Image (cartoon, rainbow, N blue to C red; front, top):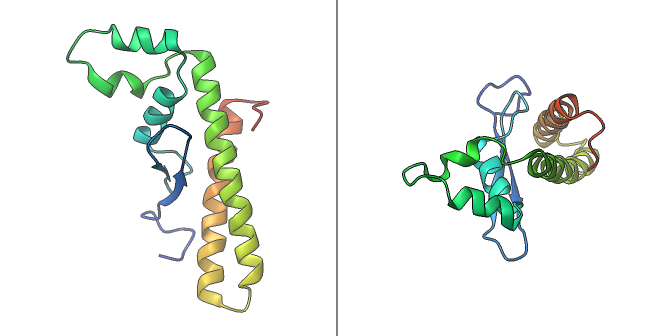
Length: 133
């Protein structure tokens, strides 16, 4: 589980937003972010107009509508939020790796976590060049 090549390695980052239920942002080994995490952020970061469009969609569609971006503005906000959240976790991970250089197991785990977070941020920057976070 401490290998950066482990295909089952997923990382979670706790997300707390004012006025919202806490949830986990899940990052997969390839650097992709869980669709449910993105859907939650799309809803939480939507404008009243976007929420009105969301609520006016036919019954039966449910939260599946959030599997795709609500708008360009919303998606940029979502991706920026994800990148900044992962960047903060990356900072903590790097600091932890530096402090645990004498403990091989913990250091290996944190190094693998660091690579996974870096990959996630790179994926976002590739898809959204010039994104600010």
